[in-house]
Length: 352
Image (cartoon, rainbow, N blue to C red; front, top):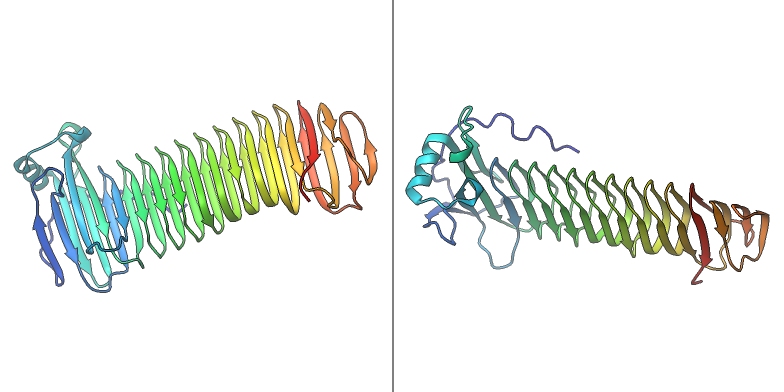
């Protein structure tokens, strides 16, 4: 992951003036933004930094290109406009500007300011053209992206990530929230240390990692690596190549088409493969493994467990015992390795 050290050096206060092609509107603080700038021209990049709020960047039909600023007191406390202006002037630097094809929206604290009780939560919403790359960083809120084409890089230390309908490379990280991605295509790299990951209707090479939650994979296509250290794994209608593992939960994969390597150290496995790829590799240390494979296909079987059951095994050549089956079925072909250290292996054959 490229996202690190993203809040270093945030130290001054400044409110930029009016740049060419930009208009400014101030709002009362209720349901409207505290501050808005609209921008025109061929903008293709957005940079946003804030240490105490959320970030939202989107292309939505009918929306003017603009940056909206939302400001509240720490812990969501409502403040008067005068209180906000006083704290901004004394303790913060707020920069909203365009330079060439880039929009910058940055909220920084002055010097070594660390007065938590009087801190501000400064959030940004950016509406722009569809072809838009981003560089987004916050230490105190969620990040959401929607409807963009371009490379997206973003990180937060204290919130969730939501990615919707993005076409381009995606590199995102959070240390304190869940991740949801849907309807996106490109090289996808997402990681969290404290939440679950849900990925649906996506295409491309994907790396999904969490240290503290479950993985839910639905209707994905590509080369996918998905790992968790603290939750279960479920997948449906995955096509391509999937490598997935967990140290603390069950694994359930249904409707898999392609190559699969899956493992768990702390649960059972239920696997259904409707179309074989180059290999099947399944391992666990603490439960049974139930596998359904296409019928009539050539395979090299290597099955081990407390007990191994393959009802209706035909066209087989090799060795078979209660706890191990090794050999070729239908003349051999795709290697199928299934090993349960302390549980049963149940293999059946489903659709052709």
